[in-house]
Length: 174
Length: 402
Image (tube, rainbow over all chains, first blue to last red; front, side, top):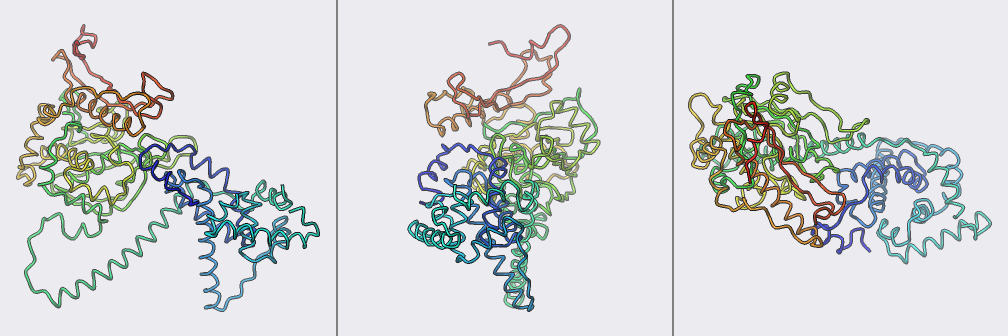
């Protein structure tokens, strides 16, 4: 599944697709959830806010096209994650060049507690877990957002659940 | 619900960061575009310097003569603007006077005001889809008499209006210089919704502009173009539907292709605007005023009837498709419906010659449910009329008897 399927593109080109949700309505509903998802994926509020704001501003100017996608939220997550990754890479390079050591700020509770729990997961596992349990996306949507196969999403999620279950002492809770 | 979902719910209910308002997102988007433009301009500057150096070394041939308005000033303009300011006279000739383009209205002496003598005045708004198309026509027309600089404010028209999210640009910050007249553009609001409804205000009309706007356009429709207190256009002169789904580059590219719907609408409107602008010129007129198509347009301005519109059969109302026809068929019908009413408005004459037409508008309407066989979502057009008749006529002399 692609974010925009061929059938939908054909409908848009024929002018037969009616857009049903305004940007304002979508933005009001999804923004805080996206921030929470990215904070818990990256452990960095500043990075998460930068990624989400950039992605939302890009979505705003392209809303006519994006609102016609099967998963507008998926598109925005993908842009937000990519942007956050670029910013983190640039920041890391600056730190290396200028030999700066910037300590990661502590997350306030309860985000800090969740972060302590998931910090030991790999970055990919954290992203998959957060998109599944915080963004409440389906596995095929997560696969689209991260550009991986659905099977990889399933196995990554399974491994992450097992690890978190061991940490919590109750696997069934996840 | 998993334990993680439960824990993270608190982060959604009590967000970790404030949500920027939509205006902040627009600002961020504009800054991003400016950064990109700066980088592009830097690269272009390097290329131009490189090319100039090579030319200096290799070329000794004399430069060819150029128009006074296509040289240095336009180097600042993006390619789609350059396409608009350089539409050849031959293309304007080939486009002619399409029947679905409204003819500017002659201002009668009874309502004349001296407020805007010698000034070409435009009042529009960034949200307004009709302004999106009228700006292009003004750009094509005015560029025949002078030059623009600082046209770099890209916008989208409102996403919630008829013809949503048309790619456009605004006159904010633009400079126009001409030896014939001055151009006074005003964009009254942005396309960003305001906190208390409507759109955020941008510029205010000058006192003279406000007087002319109130006098010639009492209903306050946009866009409003006043050509030297001689002619006015109220609303778009052609349907903005031709811009739907096109980028600025595609619109600019189509302007020189006479058979394209974009050229038919924009260049067709520009022909009338050029003819109206020619009436403002004191002394020797620019060569464009002597071209056959502009002479023809000048006649149409006087008579109010386009010679080409008679021959294109737009006088018959387009046949309505069946209710269950695809939306694309209904949209095509809507364009024809618009053309019919534009033509009807352009050729309208009161039954009683003693009556004066002061305002004709072609206005859109969308039904929320199927009405008269027309499905919801289809733009249906109609004509509204205002005028003045001698005492005792009670306005009936405005309307022709069936």
